[in-house]
Length: 184
Figure 1 (cartoon, rainbow, N blue to C red):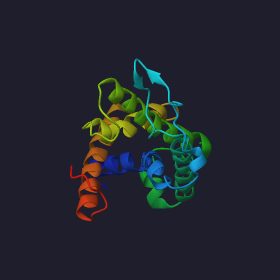
Figure 2: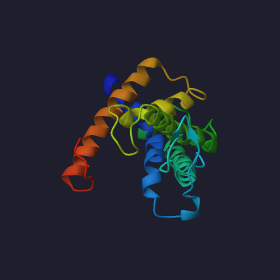
Figure 3: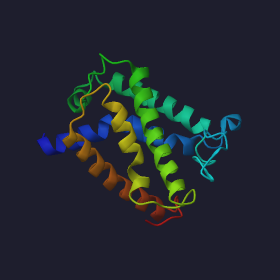
Figure 4: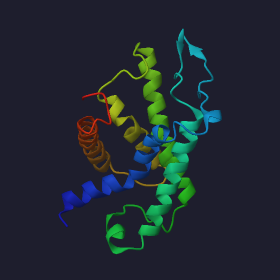
């Protein structure tokens, strides 16, 4: 396989658990309402909510659990030649729970940092902050991934570029299919 194409596929594959963790709060948004409590406990910092009502314990918990589940699937698939060939992590030597936690928490932590910064500059929840809304989870999960994997700066940049392009494609497709009301 072409080395550039392989690097792109590897960059996508290693962050798939983080991507699903980032989507989990939306996917589980109608369930377990008792966990729909804000992570910031409704507190303010300098007159503005720290994170807002959209960053909940439900989203954090299910985001992490989703990432752990996806890493478990990747570990199972690791024994198949194709997935072995695109894996930058040796899934037989890692803890599924630890890696899933790091990727899931990292993705959601990146989103929380972005939300905190959005509140500081006066952007309302749900208001676009391009390109940070698209890349927050990639930055966050990459920061936590380096705790267990030597992520090169080049692989990091490839991940940013690949997921940025994928985000635009998915958003446009969602708008075209009338699943997303916002056109980007």
